[in-house]
Image 1 (cartoon, one colour):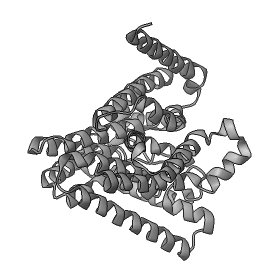
Image 2 (cartoon, helix red, strand yellow; image 1 turned 30 degrees about the vertical axis):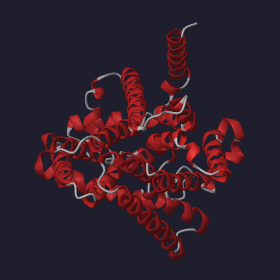
Image 3 (tube, helix red, strand yellow; image 1 turned 135 degrees about the vertical axis):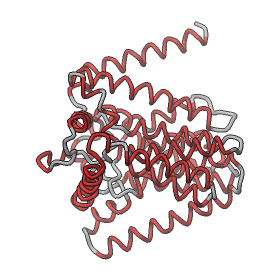
Length: 379
């Protein structure tokens, strides 16, 4: 069998697996998509998006995010689910293609396969929920590609605009704005702020200017009220949630979290400084930022780590750069990330694993490993 035939067979098997997974399980779930689907219908009707009667399943994104679901709101829910699933899968394939292009040559054999297996449970969880993180990741990877290309106002503006769109979709993508400021990428900052401003204004088409301001206020209140109650949720993997689970909502908790985040910020600054002004160094820096998003966001859910795909690929590709002890630690870390699955380790063990927030430690290890690549291999 030729290499092209084997590739075609693998693609066919993956396609069949995706279709069977959707029919057998995913289409019956997608609870987060249902929330966003109804938000699109409410936006179309000019109704408020943030209704207390929705309880845990209240829409929590900026009003403009509901605009994405407005066309789907015209379809029956089952047809809308299938359409969103296809969009998500295609976006995920595009993400893998971008990662392949961004990781420096030469590539380790089966680079994308290894990287995908490490994060497979997060991709499945994302698709099962019908979340939007794959599209946000795609926007940020496109921004990373623009930043890594030859210097020019066009690429900088594209990167900034994509970051602005991603922030409108999910606010935690705003982490790219401080990065652009540190890099003194004024064109990118201006384009990003312009894109975000437009995104904030667009819902006025449905609510009017005053109504839009009121809805934005509702969003801010909803977010501030829901955050404290979700810090002890097992699936919350942020640094602040890690310490809240261990010590409760105390002053010591917030001081410890602030200390860790300060260290991470200093490490990020050191990585940026080491990279200098070379455009190709933006790849590792953006990979680090994407990995940090779930860690620094108070509402950082575990499946949001799909954003670390580029970081995992860089580490898999640069595995030989690490000393033997580093390779052992990295391999064990990858194994824990990949194999800590409810169906594999059981209900009790998985609940303890998530309550102890081991995942937070796993990805902090990846953050340190990325920094090592920058200083050891000048990647």
